[in-house]
Image 1: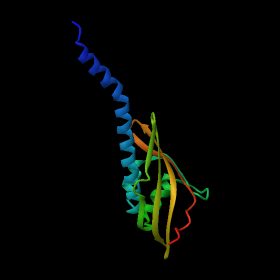
Image 2: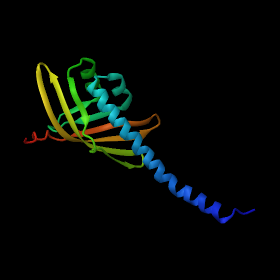
Image 3: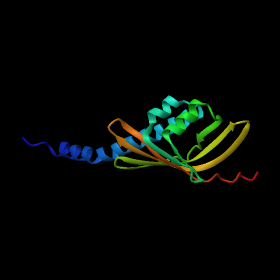
Image 4: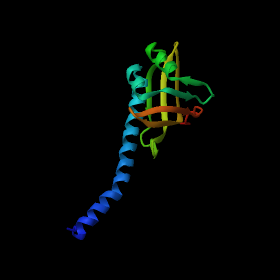
Length: 152
């Protein structure tokens, strides 16, 4: 028995949309994870950071310093930074998915106190996520140099 044309067309349409829908789902998942990560940093929530970061994670600052997962978790546990802000600026986050790899870019606003000194600046960053057996993991971050303060 053959299916009527309308059912064949619906099946073909569903098959064609499935990869696009999966891509959108992956992008939404990674976007949410990256936002969760920024929130965890602001709260010094080492448990959430640990869940999102890959064991072989590396962050490279705008000055070329490299930090590992253990470096970031130790800093969070010690509450080295007291954050007032650690958030992506609304409308700046962009997620690009390439199979099992996703790249997030956004403008980040950071304001904190450390050792009695306050810092308040914005910078662009790129975060790389890879889909592994256990799900999406944040494997690499690259922070740009701090932007000059906006003139008022």
